[in-house]
View 1 (cartoon, rainbow, N blue to C red):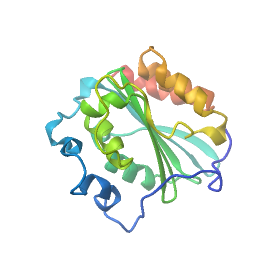
View 2: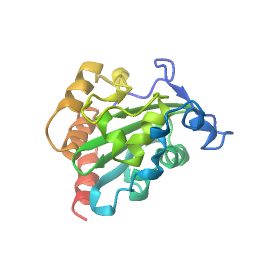
View 3: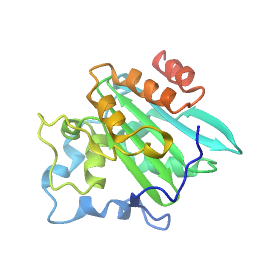
Length: 201
């Protein structure tokens, strides 16, 4: 897999010296639609969460590890945990929920890219609502708006184009398998083994 290149992307800034809440200022703006308050959404339970995995390079070696399933309900905390990994060039987090949607978060320094496979899920799951908050949407997508939201170019520098990612998001297959397919296209050695171990729990 190619090394991450910090010079070839445009994304969001979440400074390490900010609190998590300050990183999500748009969600707190008084003009933001009240629908973006995720207090009315129930957290995903263990049985709803397919997996929460991270991939990163440490001393040139690719590592794939399972993270706490609680992170499937909190994008801020997922980002925080990804930043704590001993990564040489940033880390990527993969969340699949209920075989129906996935979230990918890519962290490189203070920069964050996120992708939600199905925008309508922002009305269903807290982490999907968090993606909408981070992107500064003026309201949650309609329940019929199943288009992805976020950075379809999240892996453009690694050989997966916006078109590729849009096709993955549009795929009717179970999202746990779609994410595994994405990881294998990125040559994330060991991803399938760790993912299938989580799915077998």
